[in-house]
Amino acid sequence: MKVLLIDAGSNREELNEPYGIESLSGNLEAIMRDVTVDLVWLSLNPINLDILHKYDVIGISAKLGSFSNVENLLSNLETKRKLHRVIIGGPLSTFGYQEILDRYDDIICVRGEGETSLLKFCQAIYSNNLSDNSLQGIPNLAYIKNGNIIETKRICEELETLVKPNRFFVNELCAKGGIIRIEGSRGCAYSDCSFCSVCEHYGYHGWRPFPIEFIIDQLIILSELGCKSPYFTDEDFFGGDFDRSKKLALRIIEEKEKNRINPEMNFFFDARINDILHKKGYEILRLWKKAGLRELFIGLESGVQKQLRRYGKPASPNKNAKAIQIIKDLDIQLDTGYILFDPEMSFDELIENVRYIELINLSKHDSRSLKTMRAQPFTKLTEKYFAKNIITGALNIDLLFYPLKYIDEKVFNASILYNEWESGLMKEIYIIQAQSRGEVISESYRENLKIQLSKLREIDFFVLKVIIDKVNGIILETAMYEIFSEKRKEKEYLIRDINCI
Image 1 (cartoon, helix red, strand yellow):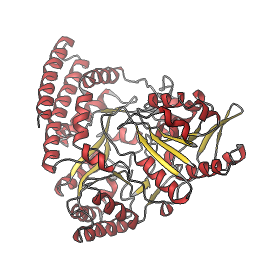
Image 2 (image 1 turned 45 degrees about the vertical axis):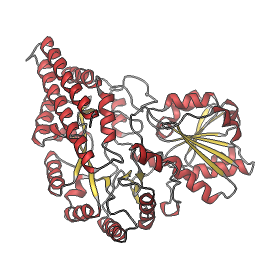
Image 3 (image 1 turned 135 degrees about the vertical axis):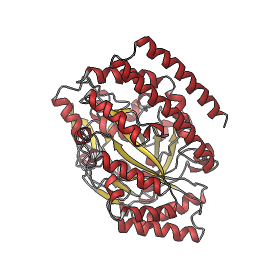
Image 4 (image 1 turned 135 degrees about the horizontal axis):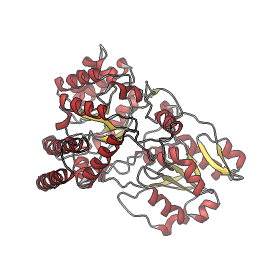
């Protein structure tokens, strides 16, 4: 049996390891002995459409920004679709399956985790037993039957049973400075932020860790392949389990001392504010610093308490500031999530956020902090927006968000003007950001890129304050656009200098 797994790529200027199809192929080949799995990643190479007819099953991993590629593939797979040999997974399938099936009623969508779904789907085809009854027995699927969407039972994978992924693309990614990925857990111990879709993603409210030795084996493999800076994909790295995290850090230190893991290997992962501020938080972070923790992502989201409550965040502006200080004290690099604009925001809250960003010095940080709320499918916040008639249109299938209207006209005007400003050089800046995240020639090179990025972010923040002054009637529109022109030249000069590094 021959299976082709295609990662449909993305419109983002960043090479992220297609871990999904690597994991699916490793699991499939380990359990189905009479199967051959080929992998294609459209971000690196175009696909030879002439070979599609050779495969019994074709799986497509559809990420954000890949829908045009998905549609192109589907248009060339009409025969396979009619035989129910095409199965789609990934974020677009998980969150946009209703819209996708409305357009293509002859494909199978996977919602959430896909290892068991793909395995059982391939087993049914291999045994010539694919039918409505057999499809209904495969978990995490959505498909059309008699004009209606059928949704099968949602399950979570038993992580201790999963097999190591086929690291098919790592060598090329390392050579190209891409981002290598690894999983330490799935889900989030909190799972209650109103804007977050993690529960729908996994069909589960909670956190599940991979076995420690599974992670260690992965790090050894990545080290042997020349990877130095893997990104943990975990939504919540600690999951509140500090004892487990301590054991994992100590095992990494042990393997580095034996040179089974490159002593220079460093890590990036995501942690919750409450875990950082926990009485065990400082010590566990200090241990992870010794193990190689380079950079930590935290979701600040806002500096306004009312806004944090709308987001369902169990934090406060003061807690956020304390967490940042702990990370700085430990000399760990910081990446942040910050949702500046949201449709229920008042203009006073916008001003308060600006003050807070300056207070914690985020205005000079290399992270892109001035973002806009995205109303994603199947979140509490999106349900509330529907109830309040804040949603103004259909789902954007490619990027998985609904268009919104703003309650405060001044906030809306400020967001429109800022998006106008930022969009000018966004692609160029995103390329620089991508270069600073993955496999780099040296950590000093990464640090230099981050310093230059911080200068670009500082210009953005300055322009934001000018926009607020314009919306507030303090300066004229002509003066604002003169500043736009001047600051754009500054950014262009900085980008040119960065590209010469």
